[in-house]
Length: 289
Image (cartoon, rainbow, N blue to C red; front, side, top):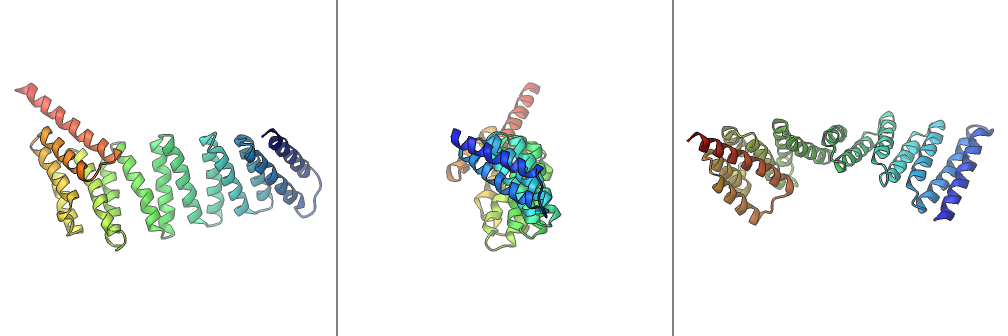
């Protein structure tokens, strides 16, 4: 490890000397870039991630001097991959710089890809607001390049996090949009029921039984087969339990569905919110009697 660090520092020093020396037609930047690349590789082998990240940024600056935007962007991405292990904040900064270079070059798919990586870093840090912002940006650029499936994957994340932040109307709208797109694609249409289920659960969280009933009618118009699915029956039974203000019935409906189709943590969280609201309503009514 120490040998690799020593080698990395030696290459870095040589590169810095190249930059302050004379060179024809930008050759000093080319020579320095080669040395910085070797330096970064040594630091990576030594797992000295901060040093490797810093050297990759110096490498990016060399490429920018040579007007090699693609190579500079890749150097920033390499720096981000090193910083991911020690400093997500620095990783985000490097990816953001890479995105800006790809946007300048009109490479929107690459920009979308790295916006998604930024979103995932915020996601890991439980910074949902920022994760939403970057997933939305990623979806926008994927869509502009007609990568609709990738765009919808990002939109699904947006909708899930909006629901977690109790911004249900917007979450419903996004899930319904994804479902409509899925129904128009033979390879994806089977998954539409899952998106409609997610939209329905968000409607239930709003506590408006009329809204969920109307939604179920609309979903049948969207997909005539939906009324024959377990997802439709699940939402319908939950709505009935809420309408009857029957916590026990609500619990049994959830247990029965979960035994056949295990609920993920996101759905469980939303259902617990609905159940809690139902319990509170029951207690309020008990207090009045």
